[in-house]
Length: 156
Image 1 (tube, rainbow, N blue to C red):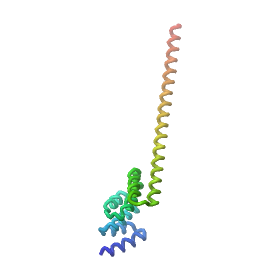
Image 2 (image 1 turned 30 degrees about the vertical axis):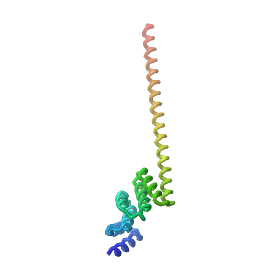
Image 3 (image 1 turned 135 degrees about the horizontal axis):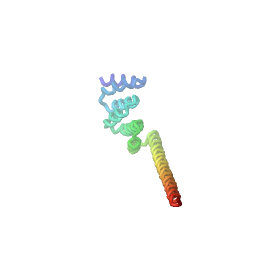
Image 4 (image 1 turned 180 degrees about the vertical axis):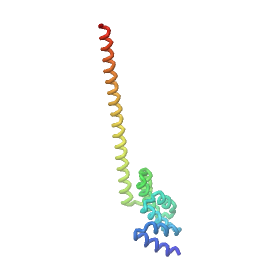
């Protein structure tokens, strides 16, 4: 019976019917089917569910691919640190150009985010300093005007 599900699931997947493929792969307990189930979930944009399925795979032959896809799913969720960790773990199991490319891309993105945060922080600090300087100037001007008023009233 698994054979029929596998063939139908593969056909649905290849035709782009990822929902149907997910349903059929979900009926098969083999790790290869789980991998395809996770991939179908990923292609449907169900990244959290895909991660859960990928993480349930225990077949060591699928470990590098599984971790690569976990990394892709985390990246789609915007969880950059977790994606980087998954890619690094995948590369420890087996080198792969696509995985290395994705890892480098995310590390670059993370560096850009850090630089942007640093620039934003510097800009905020400069704005705070400018506000303080303007308040100090205004306070000094008010004090000077008040001192001039006091001097003028003593002359009378």
